[in-house]
Every structure is written in C-alpha cells, then in structure tokens.
Image: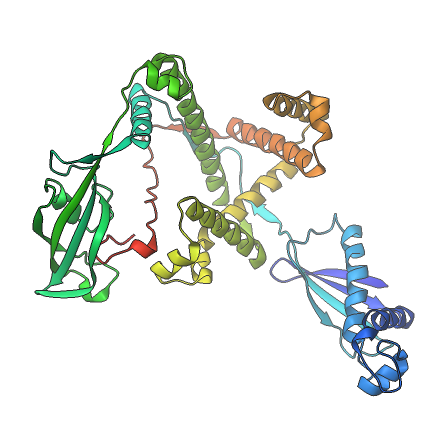
Length: 456
C-alpha cells in the first residue's frame, strides 16, 4: 500500500491510499471467507460454494464493498499512526473511490476533519478584567437560611390566610371575555406562592386568601405569551383555596448545627463560610480565565471543522439532559413543551460551542508556543495530593490509575501554568462591579403546565 496526504478545505486532510492488485486480491478473498455463509447456490451446501461460483451466480462485484472496507480498516489506522505529528483527526473520514476503479487500480480517498491551527494576533500585553468575589456575613446567613428552608417541615395551615412561600391546593377556572379557554381550568392544583410559576399578578392575589375562600382574580396575559390567542388578553380566574401548607423551620441553634455535622452553631457558620469562600475563589478563577481567553479570542482565527462544533453541542445537550433528570423531568417532555425538536434545541448551543472550541484551541496553541510542560515531580506531587484526599498512599493510588487519568493530571498542570503565565504577562485590572448572575429559572414539569403559567 502507498499513500499520500494533502491539506484540503475547511481544516480537512485528503489521504489517498493506493493498493496493489495483490493486496486487492487478498482483501477480496478475506471478504469471501467472512461472508460466504450468507449465500446459497444449488448443488452446494450453504457457505461451501467456491468464490468464483458465487461471483458467477451473484455478480463479479459481490465482495467488492466488503473488500474495500477491509483494506481501509487495515491500512488507514497505520497512516494515522505514522502521521500523528502531521495532523490530528477530530472526526470520522468521508471515504470515496478514486477515479477509474478496476482490479488493477484500487484507490481510496479519505477526507478527514483535522484539528485546525489557530492564528493568534496577540496574547501578551493586553488589558484584561480580573474578577474577585468575597464572602460576607450576610452571604453566610443567607446560605444557612436557604438550608433551613430546604429542610423545613411541611405543616398544614388552618389558622391564617395564605402567605408567600406557602403551597396552596386550588381549583381555578380562567375566562377571557367571559368565556372559558382551553387549558385554563384545573382542580386540585398545587401552587407554591412566590415561585413565579404562573403569569404576573396571579400568585400575588392568591396571597391573603383564606382556607375555603373563592375569589375572582383579574390578570393580563403577557404580550409575548406562548399561546397566540391569549397574548395581551385580559382574563379573570375564579380561584378556590382547598388547602394551605406552610413550612416550619428548625430553630437556629447548636442542635441544628449538630444535625448539619458540626458541634456548635459557630462551627457550622465557619464551615459554611469555608464552603462559600471556596466557591467564590473558583468563580473568581473561572471568570478571570474566561475573560483572558475572550480577549485573546478577539484577535484569533481558526477554520473549525463542523464536527468539533457538533461534538461540543452534543456535550452541552447531554449536560442539560442530566440537569433535567435531576429535577425529575424528561428531556422529550421539555422539548414537546417548548415546541422544538432535539436537533433544533441542540442548535441553540452553537454559538457557545464555537466559542468553547476556539478557547480550547487557543489554550493548546499558547501551551505549544510557550513550551509549557509538566515535570514528573509536579505530576507526582499532584498524584500524591489526590491519593491523600482518598486516604491512600501515593504508590497504592498510582497502581489504580490508567493512562488517561495521568494525562488529565498532566494537562491540568499545564493549563494552570498557562493561566499563571497569562496573568503575569497581561495587564490585569480588577473588575469591582458585581457581575449579575445568569438567571436560570428552574424548569417546570411540562405535564403540569397550564396556560395560566408564566412562559419560561
């Protein structure tokens, strides 16, 4: 087998493999031996007919496709191994036959998407925002209160009206211009007041209703409401409260702290602060590193193959699906609710996917340009650190590691060194204004969705 390769458009490489008649004959024979049991010819037991008989009976090219697959699968990996320093495949090749195919002229052409080279205009001497987040006493108390809310005991309320935070079991019937509309009616519906689950104005007017009370609630559907016939329309919902369920929070004392794994309330507060400070440090690091790459990307170009973008989109879609699973929501139900196919929804990640791939290429390129490496001592220290975290000796822990784990540690050290280098070689300016956190409303179970609910 002979081969040659050459760069092609859109970060692909064309690998041309040329096979001798002898190699073709051998592959054809292998294809015959592997597939002869599929065919029957009168006068022969199944699978025992000679190759030339099968070719006479079914056609000369009976085993051609299988023979070509055999040649490619046996020889293409050899080419990739020999040329690993020349190009890095990032997806499956598109394989075609060369022109004028015959048993004396066997040529396969593999067009393979490869990792693109990224051209960076500048990555030093740039003015870049640096983010630092601190933890206040108020942050600690807010986190503790959230934990108390999460662990609160549900109690049935009979001696007061409904309050924000209560869950009310209600019947409701909605009417527009005096007439009911599809999906505007429900019985025995559990609604947590203040959750923002229903359209603006609905939950606020349920607050203050007493057990057994019936009340007409006027609301206006948002102009961008998902149901076309209800956009901007005034409606009246007749609501009856059947049950009010409130929360009984645990006392904030040493007993509560012990339930949370600390001896005293002060020790628990210190533990919460430590966790929040760790999270704040990670947030500061992540946003600063993202700011660095975002600035560098402004002068960077790369012809990124579609397969790399699609792979990143798939990863984002899978993470989203896992998040839904944790909330007890099926992805297919959510997609049906928002009226999108899986492919359409995946495409919503395209911009972020392209950005993530470009950032990764920039990281790899600068590591290469600056010859950033991880020494054996550094890798060993990191392994020892991980071993200690699970209560094992380094030697014992190292025996359980595979090559991928070690490679991950090596890359992690390189990336840490890279950002240390970039922070030292750029003008890092403290960004003091608090960045608003991205609001990600908890997804609602589509099965429980009512027209009175607020559109996500």
